[in-house]
Length: 360
Image 1 (cartoon, one colour):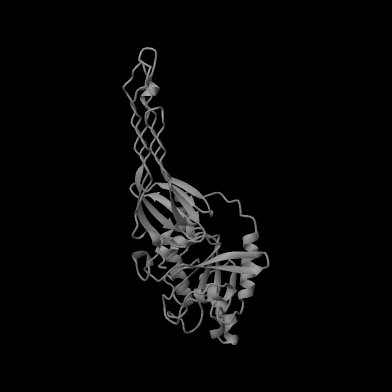
Image 2 (tube, one colour; image 1 turned 180 degrees about the vertical axis):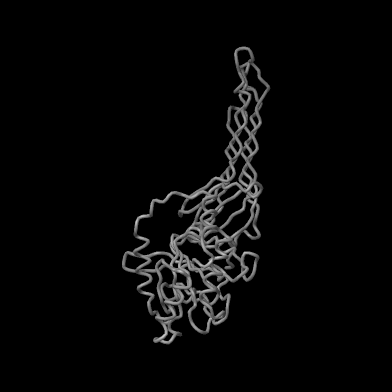
């Protein structure tokens, strides 16, 4: 099934049923009173998160969803039947926005979570409701209210603990294949990954985490170069980013330091908040570097990047260093979340402005 992570649909809740104007007509009862019943409530439209779905492709062509109207009231004080709710099944990680205003309606992050996106109309009142000592034969009623209708923009942001970041051909897909059961396409040309892939990394019998691999970025991605930056949204829920850099002499650019800086530049242009998220440096394709040159090369890269955070040198193809990497990631994820104050937008911008261009 084709991977689709953004769609626009229209949802229309059901209208409430009108109240009824009716009077009793019974033999031997000369003065029958009002007996018009209320209408039924209109059905609402709900979103339901389903863990078995991983794409919004079902809604590329089916874009209109209507709940049932409430039934009108009837004589004999009979209330109209309420309209049935309509449930739209979406993947876990779906975010719903009002397409016209941009308002965030809700975020479905747990399997089975429900979100009402259009409320059904309220039922109308029958003429029985208006009976009083001074109004013995009321002929007024209240119509049902219309249900809500709106355009929704649904975005899918995959749920993952760790995200892989890097240039095309940095070895992200090879790494996720090496440490999980995921089997994304791997080839010796760029952009073999065309959509996000998820893999469950098992570190022990009862320990695991979810890793996300997204298509690679290139310089100018913010302007749409390559596959652009649209897939970066799938890293927004991750706690930790692994920044893969190809250190082999056969890399496309031949300059791992420049590649690392290009990725950070595009990340900052997309989201200052995501650019400040915890990020580890993973120097990949170590198997293509002669053993006698590895230590010198790693030191040179770290010095040029002024890297002071955690780093790992691995070969995703041979598996060298991957065991140490995933164990360190598991230990980090098991640590309690750090209680850090949330920076405001202005504080984030000021923090990014004070960083040096070479400080990755």
